Image (cartoon, rainbow, N blue to C red):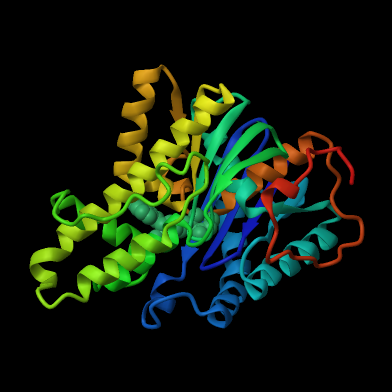
Length: 344
Ligand code: KG4
Ligand code: ZN
């Protein structure tokens, strides 16, 4: 079965074709970074308009690269939420209209389910069950995963998401948008230990997170009179990254310990962070646990993860909506999802 995946939840237009027998046939992502850069963050209306411009071209391009005609598609999967309402509506309208014209089912996919299942696209995928650490710009969650749609929330951030903390801190120390990857790059040149930043909720005893206090601690440092960006920024970036990595990895290992599971899956944009990967790899190796990541290019938003999640659901017997109604869910808790075939 061949599934076209469409992702338009935020500032990336992603399209992919996934074949259940042959794997990923093609995928392409158009990033809107340049479009939003001058505003220092994503402007929702501009994002929606750009998705409208790019999506039809990208679909044509990815179908051609996949050597797949539209008539050979068996289904279409699109991101129905969570995300920016206008941006989601572009993908949903396109998917429903394209599906109607081709006479194939159309399936709404949860964006975080896409991220969470994306490591299964790797050459050596993990088996269920596992603990998933979802770390994106909008979410920081630990989930117990026993199958597609079988997600139990173990803990989450009480305020900022990890990616959001990276982005806001990057802005405070004078880096441009999007700040996360730039801050991580700057941190490579810095030395850890100069600034005593907090490790929020490290010893809270539960699996929740909080990152807004860390951001405030950074604000206090950059507001000091003696702050010199050219001299201090790399060290502060390194200390900030260290604090986030320490909390994320400690709680992930705690989640494995508490659930008795031995596999950890890391997904979402912050999962691309090299320091986080090094720390998780080293500490889980000591315990004999395994850590899985998506291919680096599939860490951030893309259509491949949506095509894949849709294909897994179709293959498990989930039907597409029969009304071709355009429905999106800008706020949509992942733990509300049901396994394919389970109603209610
Ligand atoms: O999953 P994603 O592409 O989009 C959302 O669904 O939010 O994640 C984007 C987030 C941004 O906050 C970005 O700054 C962060 O992931 N990010 C990183 C790195 N690469 C992306 N944060 C830290 N280190 C990185 N290397
Ligand atoms: Zn995402």
